[in-house]
Length: 178
Image (tube, rainbow, N blue to C red):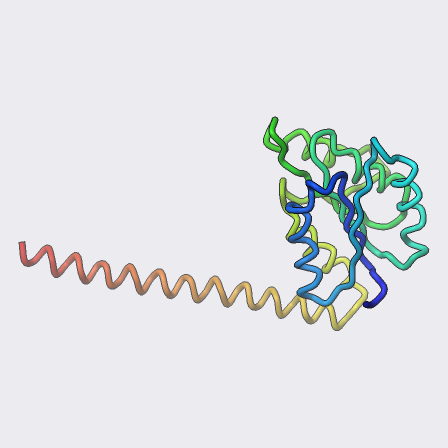
């Protein structure tokens, strides 16, 4: 396997269903990644060691997911110069608003890019875009991905309009026979 360039980190293995779409997005673009469970509260030294060594090990972006107090993304950002993308996770209470606010309300000088609650896929795609800024081949893949998204919308528009047109014809026919 190639040297990982993205670290996917979560506070608990129960966060994996939220973070797995980030890994899938990275894999779709051929971006090598690693996955770790690190807790800002239960393994703070291990988390700090990971953050401070990440750039030296070749990582270029960290994607961190957590629920509740969600201190993991911010603590990683405080301990590394790498970009950190925070993924808030919805738990039983507050529907993830607590983790969203915890991640998005960082003090000046300690930025964390934040995606939507449960937005693991967008976090992975954002990591790809960060890497694509310095990689023309990856940037071309992102541009193809965006074009494919646009083509999908255009196709869905045409399909819906065709179904509606058929429905209008059917309703006209049935209206004339009653």
